Image (cartoon, rainbow, N blue to C red; front, side):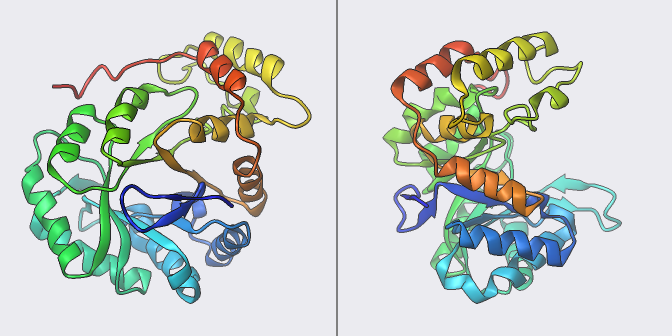
Length: 304
């Protein structure tokens, strides 16, 4: 599978990454999916301390330990579980980040994290303090690089201006093109975009009709989705193009997208995603047509 450079770092990540949140807590099944990902050429694995109260990191760490030097491991910090695990609170403080990384390292069975990401962020945070925490961890060798997982334009601009982040994880798909306004800025600063949600909760798969909801999706009504997805199916899919393929290739056709992180709850789903990522890139005509059919919205909130 094609590998792309992550920001200005020396890390090269597979065009498709495995989003580990959907692995579940069945260790045997999760390990099978991870092993299949490795066989498919995936080297980028993304988890978070929040997932399954840390159990996800434990499963990922155990499964990947024999391959640690061959893979790029990313996790996240900032969401702090309550003691009774009834919910979590946001804590981007330097003190908490430097405490939480120790627990993630233990669960992941490693002595360093390749990409440590702030799992959210608001403009009200003490951003300078969060940056100091990540920079300290870098200088200590505990993490190699850091990034943020955020969709908020005002937060993203602050980190672009004030930090040495190499990547930003953002929800992005044919049905959620809001991040595109930030792509020129990130390209200029050589900061990679790692996308999540490329198939929009299954709406951009062959099973899309069963995923339609009366509530629609984001600013699309159910009727609009039916019309849009029917149009894509009619005009762009063929024996060689599936909806999943179009969805993932649409992500990869946009600079500065470096890797598409997709979850998989089965080996079959993982293989379908890998096949889509390895497919022929979209032609300019296909890309332009998909852009013309879909809506390019802007974030209405989180702006300066």
